[in-house]
Image (cartoon, rainbow over all chains, first blue to last red; front, side, top):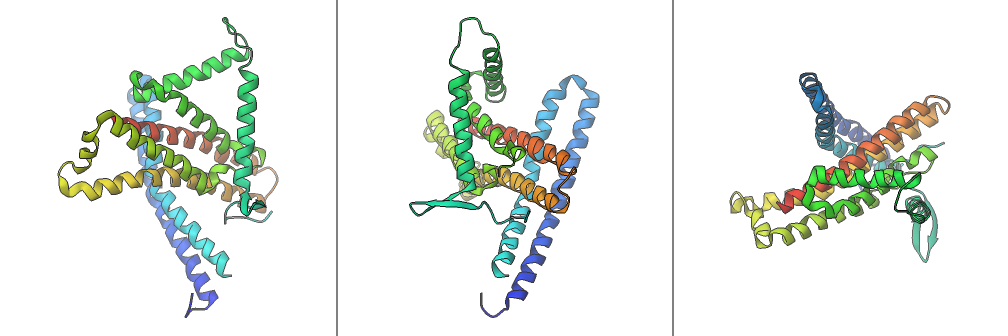
Length: 85
Length: 217
């Protein structure tokens, strides 16, 4: 890592890690939406609760993936901070 | 307690290979599973009682679950997914006993996702033969690169989802322990270790089942 001093690199990496976690917004909205729809479905059809819950958890886990990706990017950037400092 | 976010500690080196906490904890799970399997299944009788009832219930649960997701004719996958469920559940909830979960290491989850990846394509080709490979060019030939990227993304998303959830839990628990080591961590352990562990076990297994089933029909 040439041209920049360690402080600059660490600071930028830390900023990037913070910014990457803005990606946490998306899964939050998506999971909330899925949960809300599941509540509506259970209210309409209480006997299908088991199936609805299974499908909801599965859908939420898939929606969560993008948030997990941003988390892993933040993770890698924090690793750079540790490495440089 | 300092917050470690850079991965598992190396305990010692064996012939130049670093033996990390992940490997030691996986060995612990292996010992528990092997000894448990030997001790619990020794005295099986025609008419079950006690532990045999519980074990038969678990086996029937896994069989029913596989039949529910993949259909009656693919019950042959039940032993594999049963093993996967037991291993992932023990691995994810190991944080309750103070161990670092082996699934909080990308190597473990990547290995499991690779197994699923191989299974998807092996059973896809075995079930449909040439038509399986031809399916990559659907709806028309220009979609070939897209479909291949989509297939490669499956094991990545499986591995990163499990790893990210469990590692995130470990990091947050570490931060909370360093701030307030008494009282507050207890209910959070139930959420981050037990609930997230169970949900991620379920999600990994169901997604593997669905991917294999989609490749087969």
